[in-house]
Length: 269
Image (cartoon, rainbow, N blue to C red; front, side):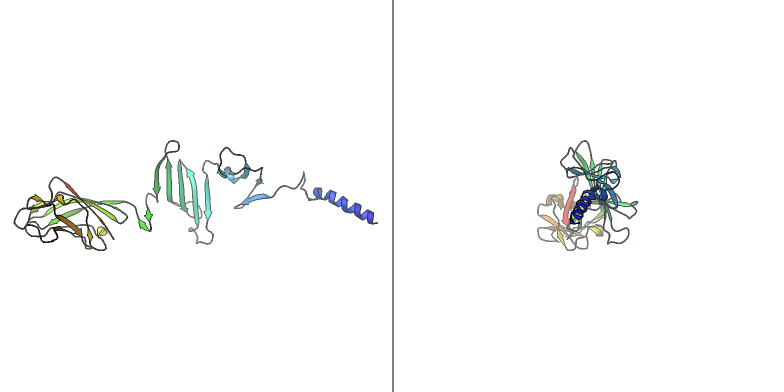
């Protein structure tokens, strides 16, 4: 009886593979599953490759990268599942010779670019954009670094007539550059200032301005000892030496030297 039991036990072991196997052969290997996609069994050791339709496989590839994605529109979708609707999806994709990182809605129908790297010829990167065309965003330590430009009407004060000119400004982060054309007039006071600066360019506190002092004229002569500052109220005040009231009052020419453009730079802090 014991012999028969032993024979039956070994017969069961011999039949086990056939009993466990699906029709047509031995059990298949576990399938790799990603985002609900069941893929064919993994092949021999190699690199993880993703082809069209999201098919994963291990295969020998000609490059040395551990993950290879090949498609006419290759991309990776990242879903931060604990966030609110339309506030949890991110997209990494390549399209039209551009590599893009995007914030997208849940349906994948609306996207805003974070970074776009555009490819020129071969491996040359022709352009890198941060933010979308409608909402360009560049920031360093939380400070927006998107360049802005514009113009305004600058008025020279401290002269007998109205003297104005169209000035240009450029900002990057907290730095401001203002370019003012030649503005001169007959002096009627011992002070000199320029007003009209847009409020967005006013510093938090009074700032010294960097410029070439010989751009300024007092009593018809270049002023090598002149300097200036911009107040928190947006007024450019100029000094002769250390005095705000050191300019000549008597009809002589005063202002920004004729035939030049004065460039003033300062910080908004």
